[in-house]
Length: 260
Image 1 (cartoon, rainbow, N blue to C red):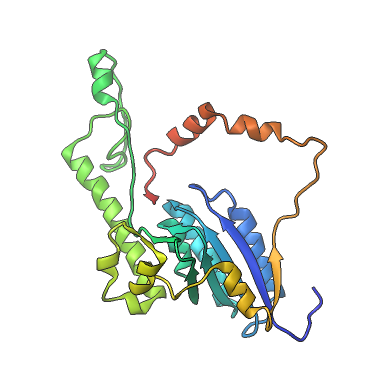
Image 2 (image 1 turned 90 degrees about the vertical axis):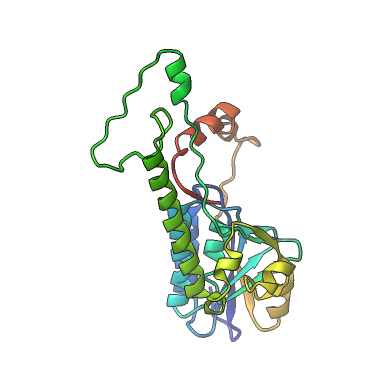
């Protein structure tokens, strides 16, 4: 990019799924913005669209965004649709957060759904042995009996993640220190409510924000260069999106705490 007299605003579009499958692309986009950007002059505008997902993956995504600020570039997050739980975990790292009027923001909570078929197996005389080393190696699982002690420990693990989530928000938005317990109930708020509660800075769409800075900044979209295909339909993608594969994909992650 040939540097002009005006500063640059690098636009990144982030569409998040449960496991943040676009993590590598996000990392590369941020690395490029840092390489090309001028500290104290340029900014990065990240448009987030995500209902949240796996705690560790969204925590890593948030750390990727923090690289932008550490490099001396201004970080702006825009939410046109939703930035809930893990999505907000990322968004709260920004210097400024803007959201469209009917965007959903917040959902500061943790959830983990673990189906348990122990009683069903027992009813059909199927014995299952869960062998572990370490008192709390498997507190709640799919096939083993759920004990009061194990359930209590599992609940405590979720509470610990929730506390870390709230601390992360207060660290990045100190003004929410006194109100964090009031808003961190797992509820998602419309932008109007989110602004009143201090979760965002203003009610503006990403288009409106970019237009407002277009006279002062050159806006550069950072995106993956798509390869041309001889086939109009990606048959491999169709195969991966069958209901059976979707079910198998979900079942492998059932006991992982989710920030959603």
